[in-house]
Amino acid sequence: MHGGTDVKDVARAYLEPSGMISVIRADRKAPDASTKPPVMG
Image (cartoon, rainbow, N blue to C red; front, side, top):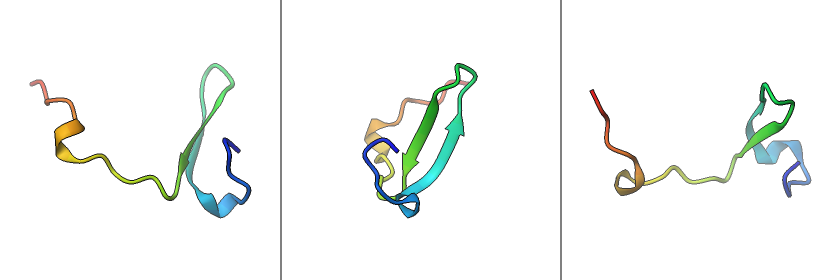
């Protein structure tokens, strides 16, 4: 589980088209505004 030992450490998990599983940990902090790319539009 990508270093986790308990399912409650997982906020979201996705099955990618390649068959890999992407895991977003529950304790991951949201990036601040300075690290987000600018919106094009």
